[in-house]
Amino acid sequence: MSSPDARPAPSVHVERTDDPAVLRWVCSSPSLHAVAQGQRHPPWSRLAAAASVAEVAVVAGALVVRLHDGADWAAEVAAVNDAIVDSLRDRAQWLFDPVDVLPAIVGGATTGAVQRIVDSAAGAITGAHGGSITVVGLDADVVTLRLSGACHGCRFTDDTVRRVIEPAVGRVFPQMTVVVER
Image (cartoon, rainbow, N blue to C red; front, side):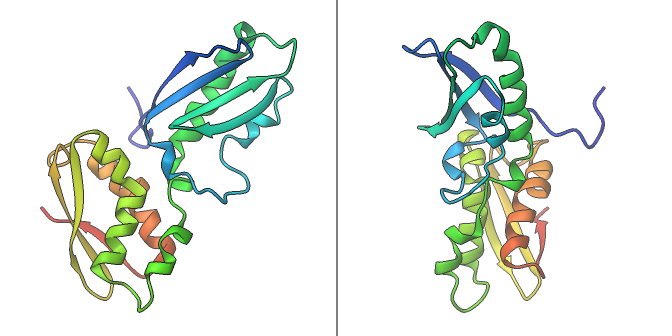
């Protein structure tokens, strides 16, 4: 039995490529397109420090990992997979970069500005599962969200709000509390 604090495992699978030194980890949840382009040390950068890993890159919704010449995927695939899954579990730290929405936020919090934050942080995750999260209320310190589609009644929504949306909103508007309409 897992602890109440356990983070759900991301949905990833590994694929071969034409190059035997390269494997692709396709990530359907969370979506990698939300990774900040300017991030200097993405969470999987520790992979690049491994002696056998030559390169890690995000390409079309996947992490592409290349080994140094002479390294063997049979010996490395499990460790690389575990490191990628662990990095993706901590997605609240990297899925959202407020720089993406700050230019759109000129006069403070607006429903549209907060909705862009919610969409940037969790839109790909919720959309991939047939759901949506909409900002339906906003006052000085409370954001109210409505869950619809597959998100309404989903047992993982509270975790998504707590681990993904709240930190994203808090990075731009630290005074705000996020609540879900019940």
